[in-house]
Image 1 (spheres, helix red, strand yellow):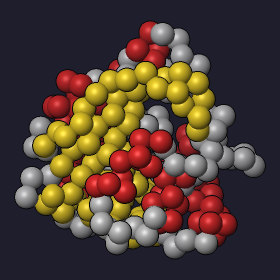
Image 2: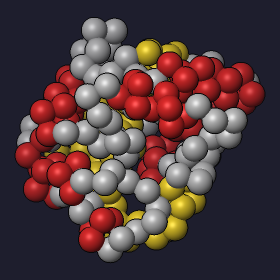
Image 3: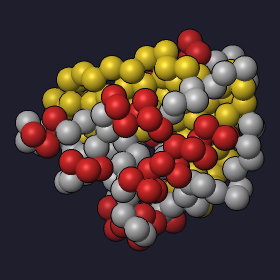
Length: 209
């Protein structure tokens, strides 16, 4: 989710609609890799969780899940989706870094399409690493500059400076062991906001023990 200086207000406007902008199903990369990476009762933090599709899915897998989201509208939609699916989820109305997120507390942090300006991006990524227990993992997917260069209609921020590259993620997660870091063209089917071919980067990074 692309963020501005006031991401809460920005996403309040985007999420203020009867349907779910990015659907209610989890991101395909998260659904594919997270169950293989975690024990059943692992603690998971979903950062910038939007309307809750990833956090609610994680809770449904038996993970103790916290969804952190700066949009008040998004938080309410997360709660409604969790109620509909019959799962328990913790919510934090905030953005990273957040005083409500404990260091070395989570087994995994999920970062899906959380695009921000550089200073904010580095602060988010640093705080996500701090939130992990030793041995914990970050699962990240985001758009690369090719998304704009190829004029993809499947979403993403308007500016190349907000995109991710291998070099950016290697820099931001230099203290982590990068188990997966690859740029791909994938087919997104994530509600009306993300649908069609997309140029993305996918990362699995593990915090050293």
